[in-house]
Length: 194
Length: 50
Image 1 (tube, one colour):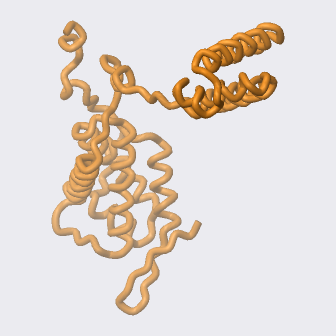
Image 2: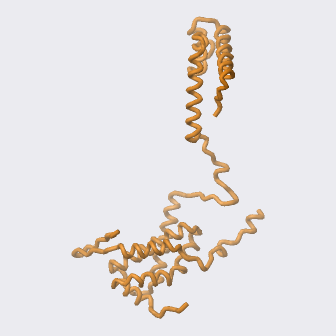
Image 3: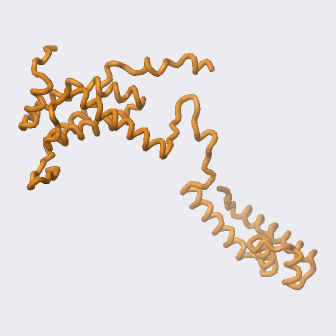
């Protein structure tokens, strides 16, 4: 490849004077060094792309606004900008630490979300509705005991007091309620699992 | 343990020929074309004419 003889300073002034291709030349000339420099600090391709982009956005803005003076050299100036952006990136990440998975260890193997996903929530809702409809079909005395025991979480002692029957009767009604529910479920092949 | 030792060291992993994606460079060039700096008295305003 033919080495361009134009200096950075000439390209910068050409760009400031409106020559867009000068910027292209500047980026292509230094992209590899700047990119490798950023990558050597952050070790992440995507973050490197972001910081590289932000670096040149700053460069473009500063040049366009006339804030750049050719005191030193162009490349060290750009490197300094990228260096500062790398520091900003680490500062931001320290405030909000991020854990990344790698092939050796996956954080989700020790952390899990026990809540149901959307599909399972819907299924759970449907199953609960089906069970409620089945309970509605039970004889009133059995239904009353079952609702008190399962939904109101009352003890059989409380149930017997409230319904005015003995504990044994309440237990018997509960037993028949469950037997009847199972019978209906078996008869109609109703699937009540999530 | 075997995995740990067989991994290349960090410094070796930085390939010297790493370059940004074409899209990134294209974005920057397009951004440069779209950016317009408006001077008003002593103030400078940026405008993206896209």
